[in-house]
Length: 140
Image (tube, rainbow, N blue to C red):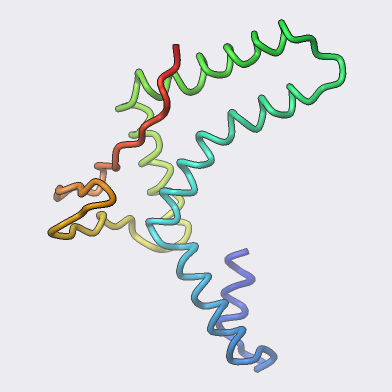
């Protein structure tokens, strides 16, 4: 997809109208930004396990007991692990972010710090490896 957007942005043969080039350039920059990469990988981590579970739960020959066991297995294996071993999980997430940013030829940037933050946490740090806290609902 990024190659396609790069092609539109270059517009070497002048086949794209100016509005398409502008929108393609903007989308290309957003997809390669640190904010998008971090948000994408967090969603991939959380939704990935949910997607597998949803597929299995939609089977036609599944009884309720097996369904509850599958839900327990997914929550214990995925989400509870993220909550209990958060340093290792976020380190792995950061490594994935760096790799994806290198592929996009865009360095991972530090979150922007603003003096007065009322709607989200303000992470004051010199390091790029500090990720904002993510609260996953408590799992029994």
